[in-house]
Amino acid sequence: MADMIQVTAGAGETIAILRMGTFETPCALGRAGILVAKREGDGGTPDGIFPLRELRYRADRIKTPPATSLPIHAMEPGDGWCDDPKNTDYNRLVRLPSPARAENMWREDHLYDLVAVIGCNDDPVVPGAGSAIFLHVANEIEGQLMPTEGCVALREGDLLRILQGCSIATQICIRLI
Image (tube, rainbow, N blue to C red):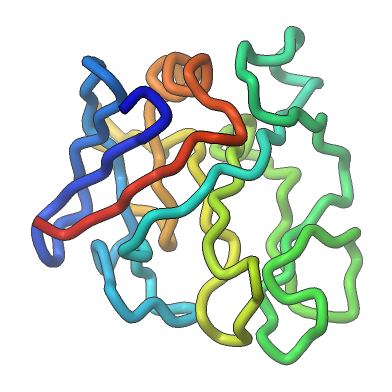
């Protein structure tokens, strides 16, 4: 199915195989691997099937909006993502500074230059069940994809290729094998 991204890995593995159509590439997972019972701060990538909501990108670094059929939004300094389960904005985009704990989306590194928001724990939001689960640019050290805090991360070229086939109908299936 063209509208499905498959991500599979064994228990505890931080590198998975991502497949979309005939394209296949390694990707990084959370430091705890894929977890069936995702909780805030556990370092796990959630097991399940999720929609892709939108693409956010750094227009100051990526001059031409990426080719995709997802809704696209240019990020701004001060964009954040609330990861405070006690706040009503939990697992939502917020403006920084925020009264709640929130992750800075306008990063000095390039990991969030491209961020596809994975619709995990957002309809409805359950406090503590995980936040800020994204498909984003991988941190790579000496050719090795490094673990994330719970996201799925790809080399930038691979992410751009995947995004070309994405729309609001696209789902990402993250499964233990």
